[in-house]
Every structure is written in structure tokens, then in C-alpha cells.
Image 1 (tube, rainbow, N blue to C red):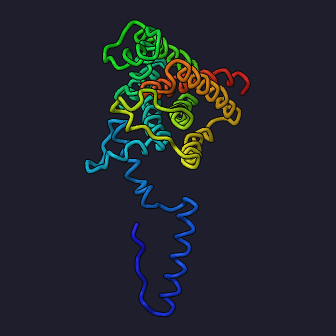
Image 2 (image 1 turned 30 degrees about the vertical axis):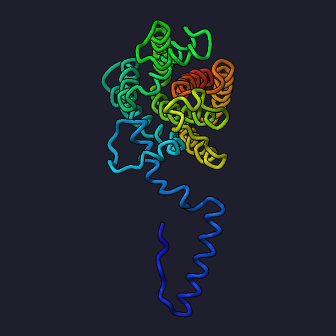
Length: 285
């Protein structure tokens, strides 16, 4: 970001000096863009282009795509918000179960089934592979197997059954919060573990480890939609975090880290766990 110049008067020189000092302090504190961080708006558009099929600027620097992962929860706002809107409109015409299915379809179309595909690949890989090399080979295969099909079908049925039984006024808010909070799980795995495929994979260059400051920023964004729900729903964060930690440990034990498919699977698991948790907590609300 270029700092505008002031007239070279005594007052202008003093203001310019003060401006530089403030800017330097903000940069050190991480509150202002630095050459290393670059344009945060462009990072958001990179995230939009990779994680959704929504319109985005064409002139983007895809070398910085890994850093855009910190905007995953904000992408969750968009996807969850549109899914919630679809549910609200569909619920005015059809039964609630139909509205839920249409909302899920909207989310899948918006993301190109990116996370669902990762979940299916993880089911196939870890279900059919006996060692790290075989698991990674199966996950790299573009074809879906029995484990992937059954796992994806059961997960979608679980989402439908839980959301269809929620109060109609609550379901859109839960969809919004679920899409946002669940996208924090991949960031937690990226921060804690290393990429499993090593230097032999072309995708290893796309790995990014968020700093604690970036993770804190993403956490705040991810949790904000909870303010729209009853206060007791905050407790739903606990099972989501526990499931993420257990899943990360399982991935580490089996393949020494994570892959892109593992990140997608963690989002789907976290989203489903969140819906289940809110549904269970609703009994006490």
C-alpha cells in the first residue's frame, strides 16, 4: 500500500513523520499490510476462486493461493448464507426435509463438491489402504469406491435427518454457523501437522502453515455466526474441536500428516458434528 505524500511545509513534514511512525508500529503489530502479507483483498478473491464457483476477478496471483486458506471461514459465510437463503425460500413452499435437501444441493453446487469429494476419498483411502503408501495411492485415484460412496451417502443422510427435525426458524442460522465453524478445522490441521505427501508431490508446494495470529483472525471470523444462535449453542464448539483433534491424530498415525483430501474430510466431519451437537443442545434450550 502506497502512503500518500503531504506538502513539504513544516506542518506537513511533522504530519508525515508522525504518519510514518504510526505506520511502522502498525506493521510491526501486524495490523497493516506488509510486502510479505500483500493485499488481503486479493487473498480473499483467491480463496473465492479456489473454494467456490462464485464469480471472481480473473487477474489473480495463484502463487499466493496457499495463504488464502485463512479466509476459509469467510467463504463459509458466503456458502452458508446462500444455503440458508435457499432453505428459507424453499421452506415456504415445500416440507422442511425438502428445503434441507435443496439447501445442501446449493452448498454442493457452490463449492463444486470440493469438500465432499475429499471426504469420499478419505473413506476410500483409509478404508481400503493398509499402509501409508497404499492409502495415498487410493486417495489420489479419481474414481469413487464402495467406502467413499457409502460414507458420503450416510453423511448426507445424517445431515438431512438432523436439520429436518430442527425448528424451521433455527435451521438457516445453524446452516450459516455450521459452514463457517467447520472451515476452521482444516486450518487447525494445517497449523498443527505437516503435509503427508512430502516433496515428491506437486501439491506439496501449495501447503501453508498459518501463523497463530492468522489462526486467531480466522477463529474470530468462524465463531461470529454463533452470536445469532442461543448462547447455549456455544457449547457445540467443544465436540467440533474434539472431533478435529481426534481426526488429526488419526491422520498423523496413519500417514504422518494430512493431504488436501484430509482437509476436506475434516470440514465435512466438523460440519456434521456441529449439526448433531446443536440438535442435542436444543433439548435444553
